[in-house]
Amino acid sequence: MEMVCIVCPNGCRLNVTEQDGRVSVSGNKCKRGETFAVAELTNPTRSVTTSVKTTVAGYPVVSVKTDGEIPKSKIFDLMELCGKIIVTKPLPIGSVVAEDLFGTGVNLITTTDMEETNE
Amino acid sequence: MKYDVAVIGGGPAGLAAAIKASLSGASVILIEREARLGGILKQCIHDGFGVVRFGEKLSGPEYADRFIKQLRQTNVQVSLFSFVTSTVQDGDLYKITYVCKDGVQHVECDNIILATGCRERTRNGIFIHGDRCAGVYTAGAAQNLVNILGAVPGKKVVILGSGDIGLIMARRLTLEGAKVVGVYEAKPTPSGLTRNIHQCLNDFDIPLHLSSTVTKVLGTTRLERVEISRVDEQMRPIAGTEQIVDCDCLVLAVGLIPENEIARGLKVPLDPKTKGAIVDQNCQTLRNGIYACGNALHVNDLVDYVSESGETAGGAVQSRDKRVLRKIETEGKLLYVVPQRLDVNAPLDKVVMYFRASEELTDQRLTVTAGDEVVFTKNYAKLLPPEMERVVVNFNKAHTLDDFVVRLEDK
Image (cartoon, rainbow over the protein chains, first blue to last red):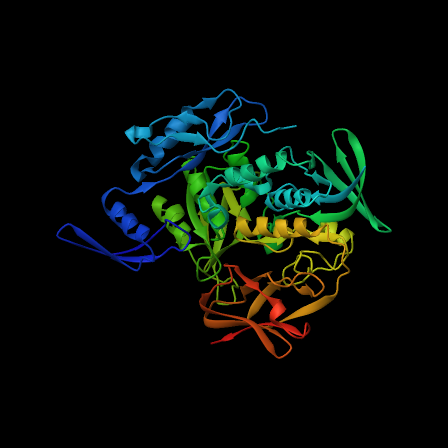
């Protein structure tokens, strides 16, 4: 089976074979390619960047990201959750707006500094 | 007011230039037209920025934030919401007029650093016929609506252009609940990174149609449908292949052009290949005291190199040595090389050169020569026009500092 590693911009083309529950990977330039291929076959994960609404002047929305990877199958559940979050005060960059997403231990954090001057 | 340096533009190039110039002891004003610093990075909320510089994957706003925090530690005078309306030379000085909340302002400076970024090609730029209805956006405009203003520009979207910007907007609009019916690309191969084809399109089952383009937009007040045609090898639409696709939004991700309105006003000579200024290794244009960096100089694919050229310009402004400029010629299948000149009176040991191949090539050798002497060579297994290459050349090796040629040839 062929797949493309998305860990870094190199985008290595991986050749993945599975035999008796053992996964072997070729075509990867680094070890992360192997980890990626195994995860893709067992529990594919993604980091997600999106935005949430705010009531702060100058910021109709603020950008956020998952501070780790969540299961790929949970991406749209996360989007639904994001739709319910409203930030009501200027937050510094890296503030947690949702904790422990789907029991993964991964948090949703802001990626824009809302305390930065906004004339 | 009088400054040593005026930096025009507060995106990644301008931020890096202002910080570096200030650290080298110059008095600096940074003029930014928007309400916040960061330029286009503010709306590039996806990750993947800073891998070269910081060794980690940051989102655009996070990458910008690192520089903004650094800038706040310097004495740079930042003027936001400020739009430059004129720049004129007066003897050895440049006079800049800009409009801001306090009205019309005038500043004088010894040097100008142009960090004005680039603009997107529009519907008119690629001659799409049809109705003049609402619902046609450039990718950057759509990205601004979604990521800064929190508004989704359409429910059923067609994207033209498979560069990374088009792919990232396909994913972004899908996440926000729009249906992306397809990404269309006139070229026979996708322009964006393979990684983005997978994580932006395949992850969300968004179809990619190659060798196809939008030939007409149709709609009375709002876009209702587009006409798609197959194209031949010369990217000309093939008659009889037209098909109609229903949509209420067309996103155009069809290329970027350096923004050089101010440069033209200052009569800065431009390179028709890069569409940015002709510069030496310190990013100084052919007009003394005027520098250009970042995407205003040439469109980059990595922000890390945008920052690098900003730092080059900012670090050079305090130099008072008279320049001795020599032309760098290009030969072979090179789309362009930056810099286009070498100041042989300035440091020559670590000259950063950027280039792009003019077509997809394998087994190539890049050679830099000065007269008959080879000063640098590097082999490339594969070169692609969308991927900019960077090399560092030590010209001090050369005995004669003239007749510089950069050549790309089969190995």
